[in-house]
Length: 278
Length: 129
Image 1 (cartoon, rainbow over the protein chains, first blue to last red):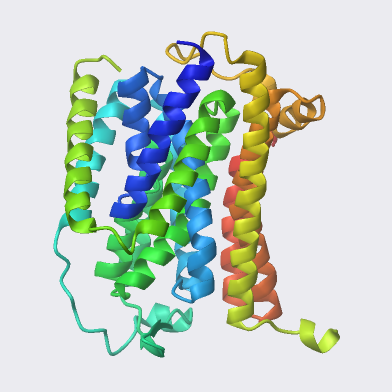
Image 2 (tube, each protein chain N blue to C red; image 1 turned 180 degrees about the vertical axis):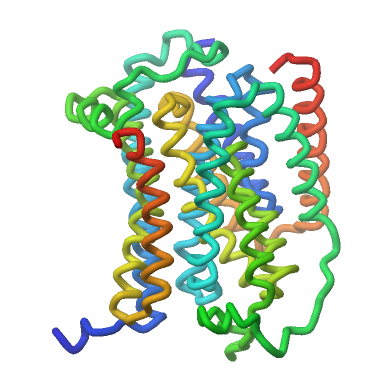
C-alpha cells in the first residue's frame, strides 16, 4: 500500500468517525486511536498524537458556533481549565513512561466507561436554589436562552468538579481523547449545571485541554504530519457534516449502533494489550 | 474610540472568541490541506512507515525547525506548521480572554487565565527552558 492509498483510506475512515462521533455525542477522537492501531497497525503513540490534533480541530470548530449562541459558561470553563491543563500535562508525561500495551488496556477501559456515561439515563434534577460559596466568589452563575427567555442557574460543588476535571485532563493527555464524557459528568451531575450548558462548556474546554498535552507530543516526535493530515481533515469535515444533519437524523438508534461498535473496539484494544500485540 | 475600548460586554467577548476560534481552525485546515496535497504529489507513491515507532526527525519537533521547513516549502513542514497554528488557536483564545478580563477589571479571572497560559506555554515551549 502506497502513502497515497493509505492516506485516502485514513481520510475516509476519519470522516466517518467524525460524522458518527458528532451525531452521537461520543466524539470522533474515541475511535481514531483504535481505527489507526487495530486497522492499520500504526504505533499507538503516533495514533494518539494524530487523534489529539483532530480533537483540537473539532472542538474549536464547534465551540466557535456554541460560544456565539450564548450557552457556554466561559468563567466556569476558564476556571476548570486550570485543572484540565495541568492534568493533561501530567497525562502526556505519563504516556511517555508507560508501555504501549498498558496504554492500550487503559484506553479500552476508558472507552467502555465513556459509552456507559453517554448511554445511561440522566436524572433530571431541579436547578439548585443557591450556589457553592466558591462559585459565588468566582461569579460563576450564569444564564442561557430557553425558548426566547433567559433561564438562570446556580453552580454547585466546585471543588468536586475541579477534581474530576483534573482526572479528565490526565485521561486526555494520556490517551489523546477529548474526554468530553467525564467533563460533562462533572458539570452536569456534580456542579448541577444545565445539560446544554455542560456539553457546550465541555466542548469549549476540550481544545485548551488537548493543546496542553499536544506540545509534549510534538516535542517527543509523536506528531507525524503525514498521518495527522488526513486524520485532522477527515474528522473535522465529518463532524461539521454531522452537525448539519443532526436535526434530521434518528439519533437514538444510531447512538446504540455506534456505542456497540465502540464497545467492540474497546474489547479489541484490551485483548491486544493483554496479549502484547500492540 | 476610547469610550468604546474601556469595557467589553459578555456578548462582545463571546462574538470575538467565536471568530478567533473559527479563523484559527480555517487557517490551520487550509495550510494542512495545502501541505497535504504537496506531500501526496511528491511522496504519494512511496511506502509508509508507521508500524515501527521511530519518532519524528528533529526539525519536525520544534517550533523553529517547523518554521524553517515551511519557509523552504517542505511539504511535511507546511502540514506541521498548520498543526502548530491549530495548537496555538486555543492558546490565543486564553490570551484574548486574559485581555478581556483585564478590561473588565476582573482580578480573579486575570489570575486564572495567566495560570492556564503558563501551563500551555510550558507544554509548547517548555523544553527550551
